[in-house]
Length: 202
Image 1 (cartoon, rainbow, N blue to C red):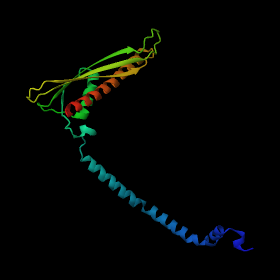
Image 2 (tube, rainbow, N blue to C red; image 1 turned 90 degrees about the horizontal axis):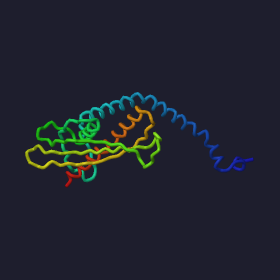
Image 3 (tube, rainbow, N blue to C red; image 1 turned 30 degrees about the vertical axis):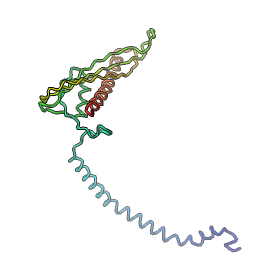
Image 4 (cartoon, rainbow, N blue to C red; image 1 turned 90 degrees about the vertical axis):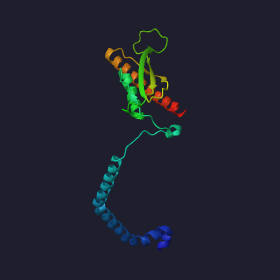
């Protein structure tokens, strides 16, 4: 029986040229060996590139980036009053992170006051200790100009709320309440920051 009758044409073609593929496999193996031998050199080059990139980044200074209309605004360098509580400290830290901090005597003075309150959610009068509670934080930012322009102080007030569920254990409930208040303070700080940017764009 002839080869063309016993096998389809495509199979016969593979059989006829199967031996011819061996030199190609040998070349592929040699190529792989070449790549393996070049790995140390590639690692040296990669290390050099990483070192150069790290040096370039170390020489750069980073500033807050905003998108949209506030991208073209000059971010104010503010001076800050001293915090009187942990929640006020959180708001001051957020403002300083995004607006920078200035020691200049003429820099606008930012003064923040923060208050918080907690109340159970819903009207149920059950004694269930796992009833959800809502924490409300109210933050007021007062900006006072000190450049001699005589501009009136600007006050901005924002609120933020978060929730937590007591467990009936005093220490755990206190920690949960404090954590909720701090999260709400960060939310209020973000709202103050956006309101200040909006006031600048006017």
